[in-house]
Amino acid sequence: MKEKISDIIYDAILKDIVSGVYTPRDFISEAQIAAKYGVSKAPVKEAMHILASEGFLVSYPKRGYMINIYTGEEINKIQEVRRVLEELAVRKAIASATDEELNALRFYHEESELQYRPGETVNTKFHMGIARLAHNDFLEEALYPLLIKASVYNITGKPDTENFDRIVDAMLSRDAESAVQRLIEDISLT
Image (tube, rainbow, N blue to C red; front, side, top):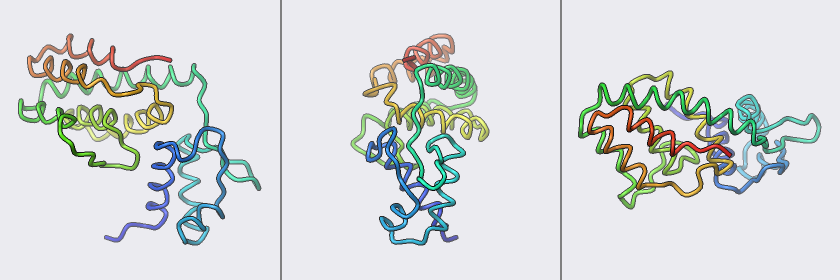
């Protein structure tokens, strides 16, 4: 099935937001994006509307869209929700994942920078990997936008792959309490 143009534009804008091409408070317009990608305004409008509904953009009629800025309090609220969702993911993954599946979370030791979704960083891929092992699509769906919002504001900075190893080691030992503690240490507040 052919991907919709609006989906391609959505992915491109989100990737540009996450990678820092656009920074908080930058304004972008439908005409600007349409010209950049050589498409009509209709799919751009659809993509930007979705990004605004997800909180990545703020619509200003007749002016365009501003890249959204979250306050420290809002970021802390995002991180609080992440903690709850990711604790559930860790516990479910420990209960159902094989050792091989858990060890596959150590992908960051490889050179690959494969991205599954636009703007997905090593940190995002690691945390989504845990969520995928929970085998709950709704959990993944709820967690992904929170991770992307956190990555836009570089909450975690450079990923702590040593802590990732400690999380995986605890999960392999089926020690949920230790894995959750390591996870909480990894999810910081501003």
